[in-house]
Structures are given as C-alpha cells and as structure tokens.
Amino acid sequence: MSFPYTMEQIPHLLLLLVMSWLATLGYAILYHVPKSASLWVGLIGTAAWLSQDLAMRFGVSSVGAAFVGGLVVSVLSEYLARLKRMPVIVFVVGGIVPLVPGSSAFRTMREFVTGHQLQGLAQGTNTFLIASAISAGLVIAGTIMRLDRRRRYENPSTDRERTPDGN
Image (cartoon, rainbow, N blue to C red; front, side, top):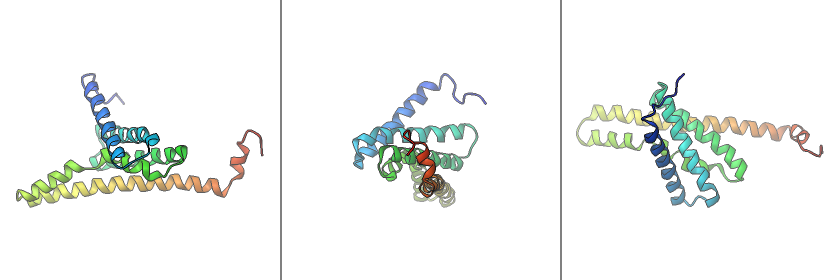
C-alpha cells in the first residue's frame, strides 16, 4: 500500500482540507453549535471528507466511500459527545456537510431540466445511493457505539474496578 497522494497533490490536498474544515465550521456557526464544540465539528467534517477521499483513491466506489465517511462521522461524534457531554446531533449534523452529494443532486436536476431524462434518472439514482450510504454509515456506527455504552450500564462492576480508589 503506497501513499495515495503525490508530492504535487499535497498543497491541493491541504487546501481542500482547510476548505472542508471552513465549510463545516460555517455550517456549525449557522446552526448555533456551541463555541466549545465548533472546532471539533469542523475537525469531524474534515476527517469525514479525508476518509471519503482516501477510500475513493483506494478504489472504493463513491457509494462505498460515502458509507466510510458516514462511519467516521458517527464514531467521532459519539466519542466527542461523551467527552464533551453534549448531544450527538451537535457533532453529526455539522460533520456530514462535506459528504452531502449536493453537486450530484444539482447535476440530476440539470439533466432533467435540459430534457435528458435517462441521464437524470441515472444521476438521481447515484445521488440517492450516496445519501443512503451516508445514512447507513451513521446508523450502523451509532448503533454499535450505543451497544457498547448499554453494556457498560448493564455491567457497572467492570467500571468500578477501574477507579483509582477501588470503590
């Protein structure tokens, strides 16, 4: 497995990472995310975009890459929600912004408006599959993370053993 980016692509990659962070941060500001979580929401969006891009560079389809991005958003959001003691939705809604297939939806509408119904239908199907993959990634990772939390509540004795005073 080699590094998926060439040295000539690194400045462009850094620019795209900054832009994904700014887009996510802007969305967080627009939706009044608490200031203490805004930086983290931006980082979740950046990590989601990077994981999606890396998956596509390693040959995963756009739908599979969107699924990977959804998984990353959900796992990071669950951890940060527990760490910051905030609702998960604060991190998830902003974090998926770089994954949303807006340009694909635009191309779908453009194909229909210009009279190319078959191309529009194909593009619309791809857009729907990408959106579904993002949702599936969010739901699957969120469910797995919550199962872990439920197991801790059902068996609290293992958590007590980890306390420094032994009570």
